[in-house]
Image (tube, rainbow, N blue to C red; front, side, top):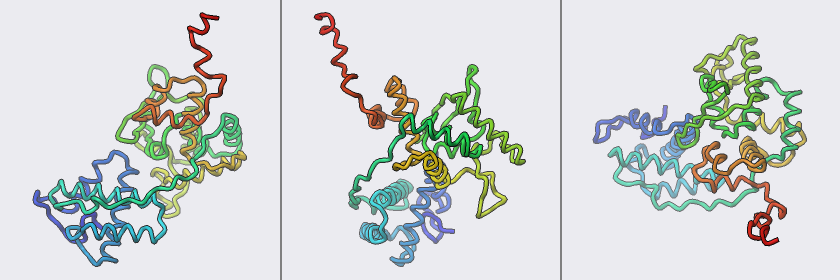
Length: 320
């Protein structure tokens, strides 16, 4: 097994071993998905570090090695976004090792990141497209797929947030169903669950019971129907690629052929609620944005001239 610090056993000046450092660094993050992403990025670098640079300990790492790694990623045709993420993961880890007394400096400091070329944006869906999609999933989707898609569109949560939902996160409060979400940045959100969404989730849970796979309170809510690597291990969260496949499959069946992803459901939730008259600040808090500017950027359904505030100027109306 590759440890994050080095292949050798290491002790810092505080007496912490490499396994303890790995545990401490990764557990700074709330999201299981984030932990996995950081570990994957750092191990990827360490394998390059050992195989290509013939070095065993990150104590020997200097800025030149990070530049060489960046060049390797560019030559391997990773996207600028992926390269920036991998370098950011490294920089965070080196900063942690400095604070732990293992490194004297951060070798990733000052390494320039590649510029990201703006790609065509992931599009939201119109209300009419969502209605077509709902018709398709009501007729053709499995209970699991129907519950996933309905949850996406009626809560506006992120893919990483949906993956981490446990059955115990569903709660009845004051006669209404809610769902507790572990959101980005360690935030805890309490979301209202529409009766239509709760109904399809119950249908899915009933279906799981019929398959002798009853979901317990501490189990992942949405579980895979198959696991090619380990057929007997189905009590586990869904993988992100499976959710991407489910989303795109039913959009295609609904005749929605533009560029979409699970994030399109979040964009649709925000855009449709704002267009329906929801308060911008309330929507921003509901979806866990730190700034209303972020929420406003999702509102691609531009106001027309007939919605101009100039039509509601009080002094003009009084003068007329």
